[in-house]
Length: 552
Image 1: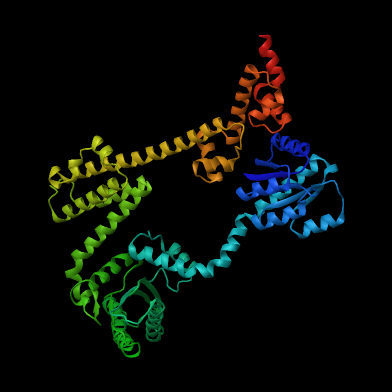
Image 2 (image 1 turned 120 degrees about the vertical axis):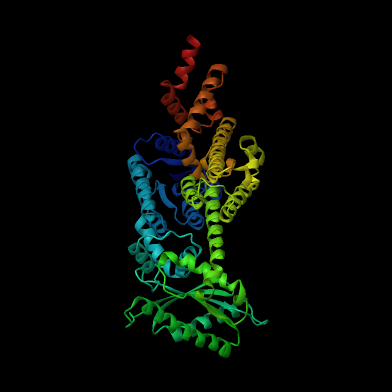
């Protein structure tokens, strides 16, 4: 919905145009504003976004051309249509030079005014056309590309990105200008700066990391395609793919040869970092190529290596094979933590379907009929308990949940005879929490609708513009308009007019005020507009209604 502001120092023209646009059928819906001077128009423009201004040029104190300059400063996308009794080339030239959309003589009538407003609407629509938005986005892609690439890789490393088929992954790689292939396996190297020099600031550290990447490329770029990903201040990942197929044909030898080559290069890279940059670095490598859907698992494994045993020392160079069996249990734990975090995210966002699908998979890793006292079961059970308790405490739901659910079932795994029973209990609690979230959203929506309607009833004779109503409930105008229509099936304009007419009926019956004063008392600026709305709602003019009541 666009907003139209009508400005003229002659009230009869403003009121007539308001009536004209209010009664239009089959025309794009407009939110109407009006002003009887340029200063009133400026007051409106300071508080409200206006899309189209239909303004007289010749006005006292500030003419339309001066107003146009103010409009251009505040709302550059606003379309200005000048309505004037002067057919003067200088006016046309000046207004066009300042960006006016059109110029209409008052003698040309309503049809020409309507044509000019329609033209302005079409111009606004074209500015928002999808093709234009896409073109603008493409011009900014280069600036945003590093951030988009990092977000893509971090989603894969953390396991939050669900990989699609290889063709879709390849299309995404090309879009992000990543020089890897989705149908070829990967190699991974994790790097760590073991100690920064004390005098190094943030920019120095960033430059140092670039230097490390440059050293790696010097040694690796002839044989490998390589991508760098910084995921912490002192940690980074290199993902590699071998450029040319190996001459070795047997499976085991073919996968081992590039790994041996990488290990040899890593010794040189580590030595160069120490020699040329005078800073110790450690590296962890995978022991074999892996598929794209294993990125998060391999990242967890190498990260775990840095956190224990030899990985805690400086200038280490290890592969996952050296400690694979020792860290397998730790990796499984990381996977469980990541799954619990995803479940927590789905719960927070109200994504019931996604939550339940992952929940069934997570809980299904333990035999449902067995007693739930195994190590894996205990770990999963208390991971779920921690997630639920955190959510319940964050939203202060403990009392409400306790009234509807046996909360003691969360305190001990011994409360459940079988794993299937524990799973059913968790599912019941999850369903309850999702229902509460849905009920809360509906309750908040109902409260917004009720508050808006109460405000309208209390202020029928005052400003009831969409902007003012939105301010009263702390929402944006466009969102309030959409929300109200979705929830009630009526537009806010229809609701306001209906209540103004109902209030006018009461005053027509219970008072002797003149009809035009009653119209103003309930918010109709124009007597003619009041009469039209009243007749549209009741089938009678205000006078006919009053006379009919008195005769009965």
